[in-house]
Image 1 (cartoon, one colour):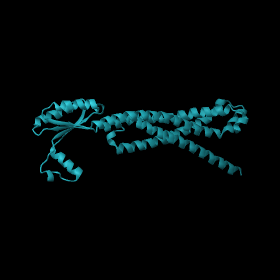
Image 2 (tube, one colour):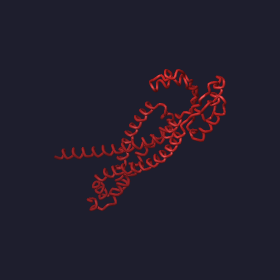
Image 3 (cartoon, helix red, strand yellow):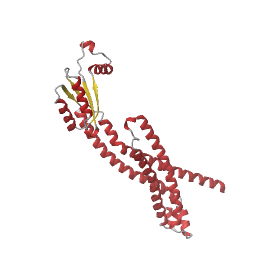
Image 4 (cartoon, one colour):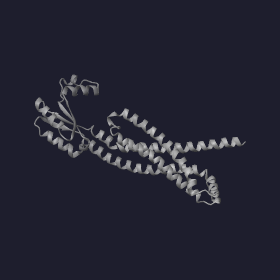
Length: 292
């Protein structure tokens, strides 16, 4: 009978530890993912901004040397990331691939123009800079027209500001929720040992002596939970880096290491503080109050 009772107690203890570790791991994992989003938010927004194309259409009589000089001057500009010359033949092939039909069969000739596609650096993708680039290009006599989607640029910049604001708010809120969830899990774990705590206190054990094993046990659980969270974060980060290599999520490994270190330290600190206050609460209760 005694052996059966001990087995039941051991199973309950293991189940309790497992639930605490799982809750710590899940909360820290989600918090870590949010940290990854925060670290790469600007990089992601910059990537999409740099997809905006400024197309400079050239007149039919534009000379090769003039076009090459324009390309070179654009490439050397501080605000330009890359340029690409697109001949009207290439443009026609692209339209044919897009529509699935050869429009020149109906028209009889190629009405498209030679052009230069310009990608600006993310910090310069604003209406003001685009207008400046457009005005400078139109000053060239061999430039016929400059085209870009100004509405898309304004919408993108507005959305980036809104998203950045809400990500910060959600991050702060989620951090508070993470602390409260881990704290609740650990308090329940300590609650199951409240009579043991009071018994030790009644036989003369000091508060520090009673708290010590509980704190060390919680720290070990925090380390296990944080380790599981870091493994999950590493898997997700590897997958995202393989799927979206253009984002270069691992371009700054020091920041990634600091984030991992922060999540690991947070797992230890939260479990330590939560267990300290949880045990302190039961140490301060009277014996009859333990039943409520």
